[in-house]
Image 1 (tube, each protein chain N blue to C red):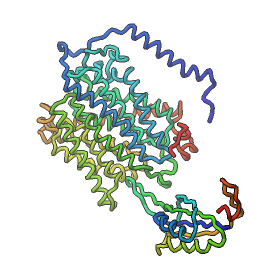
Image 2 (cartoon, rainbow over the protein chains, first blue to last red):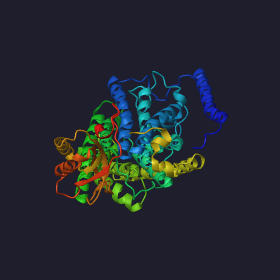
Image 3 (cartoon, chains in turn blue, yellow):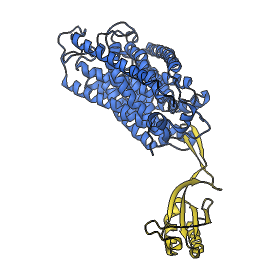
Image 4 (cartoon, one colour):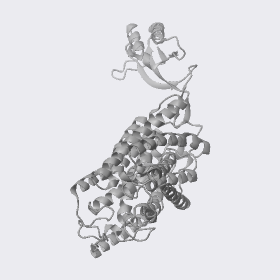
Length: 450
Length: 112
């Protein structure tokens, strides 16, 4: 291993930013004045039921990443890479938390322009014990900020599925850090920000079909294409080393997703209840749909298939969860199971890319499917006046949904590619061939699972 | 002294162990191995990706014995491990130059 610079260079590389950061923190604490968030109303009335539910939702969605996604992905890779895979989920959780605190939340969820929020919550200065975010006026701002943080965490963690087994950990940290600020925060702002341009265009995305799933799926595909296929892909055995982990992970994702979808109601009310209902229905339906599709085409119903179907259903119902009824959920489930089964088998093998754990096949395609079906199946009696889809007399909604998907895909693809290339020429994206052959756990982390 | 090495199907281990006890063999070493001879492997499918697995799990039993016991031990293993299907395994007999009991220092046939 080549030495990581000389001793004094190392000290400067680490000590410099740390010292600079501490100076900034000290200065901002000294200068901080709590600023009022423009809600336009009198002192906001907090609802303890809403707040209790949202506190719970934060925990549920965090659990989706650690250990849900960590186990789901960890079980699917070879044993020699399992630690590096779970490390990615854990490290992304920590990194994005800090970045969200520093600037991510401000970029995404304060008012600024239709394309990006402002700096009014830099380092969360201005968030006090009394402030609320206008988007969730009955809960404390800290709770809303944390809730959105868990979304900001899981989105890049999903990307890791596409690059399993071959990406440098340092490169991953750089790429994810930059991506969360330059891709996730802006897109979240466009779709959910009060002045976001997609929000104003009328897009219906309850919990993140575009913001989370199309976003991570497309970025994952870009990363898979730039990194290239794993050595031995298609010829050497790369079977999951422990599907029991994956089942545990998928189960934690399912349970945690109630926080993701029902929590996106930001209230303990009927919207949350219906979101929970359609989430459960669509997920189970999609799991069966994938299972039967696989059973009839391949002859055996597999465990990996049924849990993948469930996740596909969870993904597809995400944008729709606040807008569709149980019948719509059944339709979304059936479609998601079959479509994502095709996209992770037929499409992937036909196109030839190595999206190792199907970030694009499940999240990209599933998210887009869900977003489009939201435009078809949204009914105003669930989501509220004006939130109608094709079956409710508003066919134009489908066009709006397609527009949002297209904008997300284009921006995401371009900026992700730029960031990938940037990290590649500076740090280098891919591990050496020897490391890839022998396993990332020992080489990168100095640890192994026996 | 000879070592008898037997590669057998995993579920036959208890039967073989009992059969060896009956002929007077008291100690053995067992390891989990993979291998194949004429037995075909199987195909696993994960999200449409097919993997052909040639290697099959087997158990290797190693016993070091006095020459006098070898023939009975080999027959005992063979009878206990046979299923009359391909993949039952093989038995090898190799000469052993020396054996030492670590606790007492005994050597030769006294050590096995």
